[in-house]
Each structure stands twice: as C-alpha cells, then as structure tokens.
Image (cartoon, rainbow, N blue to C red; front, side):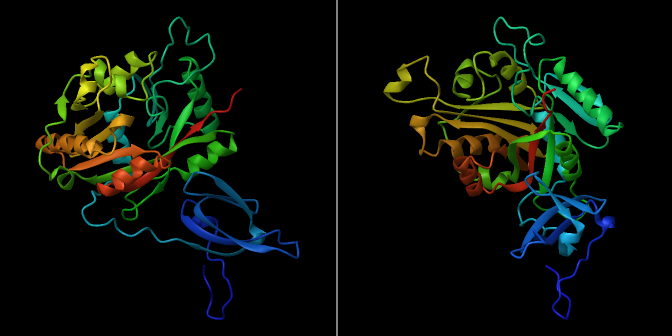
Length: 363
C-alpha cells in the first residue's frame, strides 16, 4: 500500500480511476473497537454515492464505503510475459478461439456475438421444455467484444429472449484478468461482470486461457503411436467425455468446424485391442488458424495414463500445425483440473487471461 514520507497511509485514487486496476486498504467494521484492515485488489468498476465497487480477478465484486477506505493506489500493468511465450491481445485470442470452436448458430448484437449449439434429447421439444444446457458453454454463450450498441437493460432482455427461443439458458462469457502484455494490449470485462452481478447474473465455469510456443512442444522424435486424421470417428467420440449419447450429433458438428481441424487417436495395443467396441487409449483435437493452433479434448483413458500419451498427442498435433505455418498454441482449461494444469505447465503453456460465464437469473 501507499505510505507518505511521514508514514501515514494515503488514498491516491479517485472516481476518475474507474476502469483501472487498483489496490485498496479499508477498515472492516470501522465503528467497532476490533476493526481491522483488509486489502482488496481488482478493477475499480464504479464509485457512486460514496460506495466503491471493485471486481476481483475471479469476477467477484466487493463494495466498500468511501469512509472506510484508508489507502489506495492504481496498480501498474503486469510485467512483460516471459521470453518465448506468444504475445497476443485478449480480443485476438477470443476471436481465434471462437472460430476454432464454432457454434451451430450465431447472431450479432452490435459487436457482440450470440452463440447457440442446442442439444435435443430424444423425443423432447427444446422450446416447450425447461431450458437445458447446449453442447459446451463456449458454444452457448454471448461473446461480448466491443459494444452491443444498446443500454444494459435492453441488451440483456434481448439476450434472454434469444436463448429462451432456443430452449437454452442465457449466458455471457466474461474475461476478468489478463496475465500479461503491455498497457492497452488487452481488454477485460470487469465492468461488464459488475453490471451483470448487480442484475443477479451468477458466475460459473471459471477457466484459464493459456498460450505457448509450438516449436519446443514438437521438438521430439515422432511418435508412431499417434494417428492423425481429418475426419471425426465414432471411436474418437467414444472417449470424449463431454459428448453424451444425446449430444453426439451436435458435438460432431462443432468439433468438425474450424479453419483446419486435425483429430489425433492412440489405438489400444495388447489384449484389450481385440475389443473392437472399446474406446481408444487417447485422443486430441487441434484447429489451425493462421499463426495459432488451438488444442482441445486432450483425453487419456483412465487405464492408459502415465505413459506419456497426452504429451505425445499434443506433440504430433503441434508438428502438423507447424507444417501448416502456425507458431503459437492456445488451450482452455479449468483451474481445478490439477492434472491438466500440471501437464500444460510442463509443456510451457502459461496463463494469458482468465474468464468465466455469467448465467441469467430465472424469471
């Protein structure tokens, strides 16, 4: 926190700093004898009628009485990312990732994109029944790049109506923290997160967007265990954990979409290979889009783990992406998936930014 030369805490922020990242120290229970200091770091999303609202990196909001603030300062931008990690602005990666995981239906609301990939269970009417989840949150949420061109209330009513017509809950993808880059190189959505929180939109499905260089990943001997193919096969889908029987048709259309898609499969060997209907040992997916290669669905069968299959799948996909002219990779992972985050740490994929989804309240 800030101290003056005399050792006193000092408030160095004002309402003019709304939209900036700040660090604030305040008193909890200032009228109580046992009042203590608490520190809050995040983006100052509003300062109105004597109340400061700060949105933390996980999207949660904190309201502080101006009278309780004893110190505050703006926080400088994070340092440059370490050498070898691809540089990119948040909007660039969001747009590339959206092309690499294309929704079945999209519609524009100003510069925002409404995305839907509904799944219809056998014998069900998706509109008459209660709203249900579509195939992945990425394929069934609003991507809020730029301005929607409407006031909050009108825009949210239109979004809720659009998703309800498709039997889906309304969700908005919200970016709340950039992990690196220079000032102005990134764009995050703390003010949007605060506005949605004020209107009862709840946070869910927190995730990391990670990036890494392809060349080090592919710098190993080719692995003959990994087979690459352009077409999505039933065998590949049989190991993919996010595709239920009802969603196979929708999943196949989303997974096969994108500029240049590759699927990787590691067939089983040994006695279990005789089980023709069994799932493969490992799978993966990669979509190449210019300089970017997006990795997804890196999965290994439980009884086939600890054989280096995930690394082998990613290395072979990276090798093909390099051959098509890509140089950087990206992937998305939930932070509580400790096995996956450890794998990606070891392969040099670092956190670029964080995001989560906001779900509309039930009416």
